[in-house]
Length: 181
Image (cartoon, rainbow, N blue to C red; front, side, top):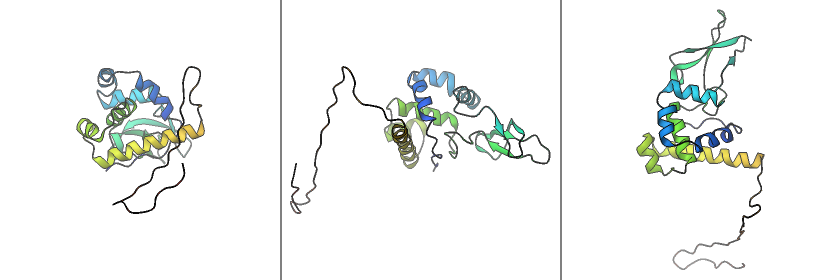
């Protein structure tokens, strides 16, 4: 089961307008065709870092490494240091153990409202819990974004209806009746 990455509030709004404007055909042909193309697209949209600074103060170099997600990351050129880090560090995808191509496809489906569990399971091959975790994670990111940057609803030419309801539950015709409006 994959774990949803740590919260990165400002990355979600930057990716959804880009993804919402493309077609599924464009996504598969131009972005998720292979891992390297997907990584280049994520870097060009500032969703992955294009450079990384090591703790020792040197600029890390990109490379291919075993033992880290995607096999791609950053390595310190200092001989006494030689630390390496995943390219996902500090990004929306940090902590996820799912290939980036699948995550971008999931983001497309989610942004295009193609998010039934059966559909996502069939097209991505993810388990039900993974799908639920990622849908909840994205919903929480959106909630956080609207709390940080509140947007007025409605506007000229838009009618907004606000309704208050009180719902009660009675099992087997027993229990208390709800009073009030």
